[in-house]
Image (tube, rainbow, N blue to C red; front, top):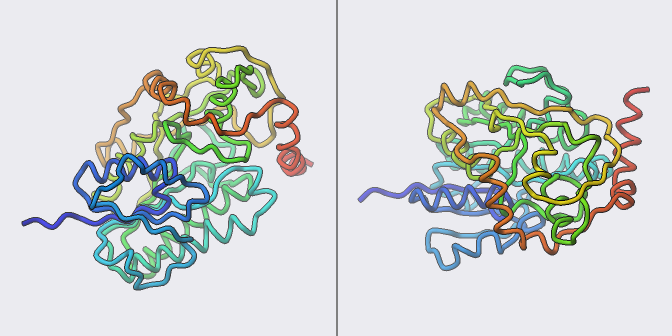
Length: 334
């Protein structure tokens, strides 16, 4: 009888992590989720209730030490756990460095001592800063705020463990992820969460600038297949950009969601376009995005009640929430 592989998914009750859990269970893996539920939701895994192949460990990643039972026998570790959002990272940089860097080191040490076959790190395309497009993996690194820096330093730690200890590591730099179960945190952030709550409340969409800015939106289930490909490949020590490779204007999102619009000031430090060059993962791993933007938005609208308890953002509250952002990033131009 073939032994089914064991996978550890950190942040597995969160947005992308829960899609990773879906894929792994569907592919016959046994899955151990590590999540402190600060950014995740137990409800994101509710559809797997009673599945004997899923175990959930509710703990902070910084509390783990080498030899922890959660990693015993694991073939793969998919590391999504961390804290996101730009504004809170400017206000609380110590928290971001602690969780996203030191937390990653704890996971690397656990994976190393468990002898895993592959550690796949969820990196962020924010490491590129205001990048030339389409953006390749060898683009210069220029983080614009502490979140971006902390994610990049976590990535550097992962590759340091690969270099020094021989831990098999690959990293996936995520562009603009979207999909069902995306975060509904109290921080002002990703456009989907903001717009979906506004639609539910019958409020106009707060479009930044003129809405012609484009984002390389990649659906979460497509991200999960990219991570699995990065785990199963014989390649190691590699970075792969993952987006749809097909940037969409914010105005196109508004058109698909349907509703009125008001415009708010453009923010400093934000690119006019994000666009992943996905040539490497396509040619080396044979990965392709499957979910079109139109289909992805349709799936979200079919599940829009998920965002009913999300905070409602309007121009005045957005201006208040982003004061720190404007002040910090404007200062860079002095």
